[in-house]
Amino acid sequence: MNESMEASRSTPQPPLSERGIACPRCGCCHFRTTHTEPLQSGRIRRRKVCRHCGHKVVTYELPPHMIKQ
Ligand SMILES: [Zn+2]
Image (tube, rainbow, N blue to C red; front, side, top):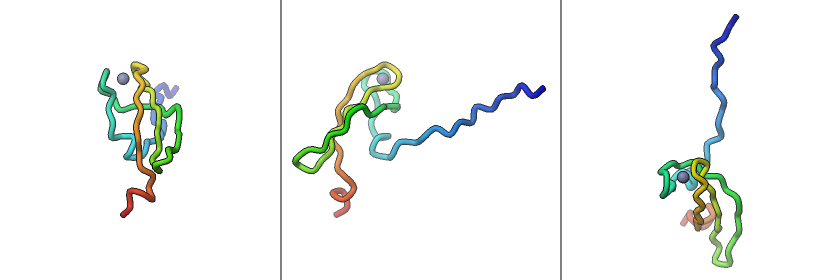
């Protein structure tokens, strides 16, 4: 029959702010956000885990309404 299975799964693309960082250990850019916490300064602290090696990083991001000036 038809054995050519197409692996055309639509992987959800993370927003640009999450694509900017790369894992310092393995160099990949595939992170999974495990924790999101708004700070008093208005920024957002996100804890992310590398999908490849499990390396954890913490990013401080500005919400969209603060980036727009
Ligand atoms: Zn990694």
